[in-house]
Image 1 (spheres, rainbow, N blue to C red):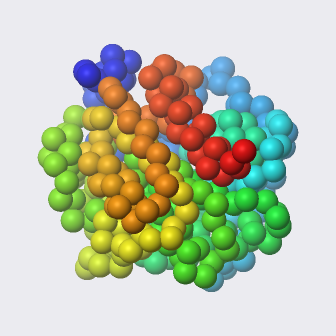
Image 2 (spheres, helix red, strand yellow):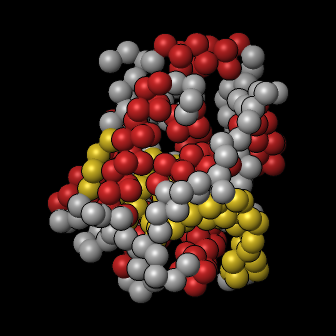
Length: 305
């Protein structure tokens, strides 16, 4: 189907305002630009979605504390989710993804722990994944007896998938994983990289730059090069993709890999949507529907019955 008209208008507006491309020279400049874009979407009258409470804390990480923000939902159903934000392993923080974490907490009826892992290029792979694992271990200690989910968007989804592999191999048990438009193919070999590589917010060039920061010199570590991972025995997954996303086909390929390995996987297509659509809940109806489908599927896997 065609690109959602609201996203078409938004992309045209961003282009005319000089807000694209995302990458602005250095990592520091790009972070400032990404943060400004994220906060500007909320407007002067923005009111955060109400949750029961929000608490700042920190997990003990391998190289110091990992800041976390803990969201208690309006109605607690007993699960806990570790959320890993997107931003190409270089951009993003607790504030850029605060509205999404609030929505996830209430939609799932689960405590959400959002982790502010270290960022590349200052801290390339495996530092972000190590910090994510430290946060997962803290979650298991802080919330004993609760089913644990790992979730994220874009690069955060890649970290969540890598973390699910680590959990299978000896980490705290993970009950389910939720992957919004994950990055799974550092080679950028899938057809959608070229098909959707320009003009849809995230570009193929952006992804090359992100990988250069995160994987200087490259890497064949299957916890990053996920399409070459042995995924047998990992937690059941929801994989959500977007039609006009350069990462679409690598998300679909990862879902197929899970399926072939006997892992329960639910695919959530995003017709008419672009990469990052979960940041536009309440603005774009099609994004709202796709995200609701993904969250409902994740909830069923996380707390079956």
